[in-house]
Length: 172
Image (cartoon, rainbow, N blue to C red; front, side, top):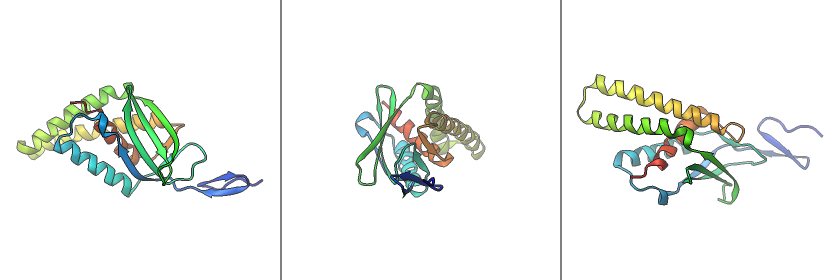
């Protein structure tokens, strides 16, 4: 039997087209104590950017597109992956312990950044923003590493998912 071509999975002799993208995202807001206006803005931008352009391919015989349901459960990131009709396909749990330092540092530098944009010089704002972007890159690289073998994502998708992981970590 011939193998499926790129982007296709063979199943019972038939190739199923893959659509490796997220079309909807739901955050478990019950686990979140508070969102500032700045955090809510970051959440909205991350979701908008993710839905606009993403690459998300879970390992397995799934065709996509996908609806994601993200939550924090017992110190783990729960990624519920559903089909386009929101029927469950699979669920992945990632320990959040490896992210603690980066998330904590990211929150600290974001607080500094939001304070700076209100009254600091452009040079100071730019310096803080460079540090913020660096931590964000570090967090998204770690997320891609932790997802390896489970879900393939591109760099921009990992960046936006890291933002949402941070949002879910806010406890008040």
